[in-house]
Image: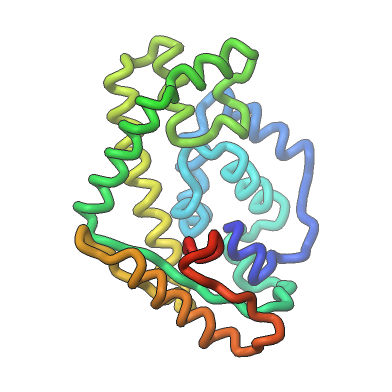
Length: 226
């Protein structure tokens, strides 16, 4: 979504109603975001597919737009006039086998726990931050908050972080594979990272032909770390 906003722009219509938004947020607090997400799935399945069931802010926003306009948010975004970015963009995607991807995700979660994720969330809670805040609506924080509040033990929280991270990665791949501008590079356990990096640099240099504006990229410099 951030990349699309930067490169393609978003619809320019100003559509908001603070009363509708407040009512939907209050409803989410009572019934839970999953119930609102189910409603969103019925009226705007495209938006529901890309919005996580726990992402209250975006669920409420999509429902707010629908209540005001009678049109799904995804339809408005696809057909409204957009402001394009004034620069060329190169889209590169890295992909790998599902088995390797899930292994890396599981390993990353274990490393996050070893480096103090649980203590970090506990510290935030002690400072007064609560799980319903927009800044806390992320995979990892939500599960540890649930653990701290007695809804599950730490082992179950870690299992859910891994599971929800895998689901998030799958949604990311689904999202980006719809964009025909992305040029994909397959990684494997034996991939040479330098070779893949050189391919990406060549792709960039061939796609952006102006030498006057093209920054030099080298594998020996910080900018070479693609």
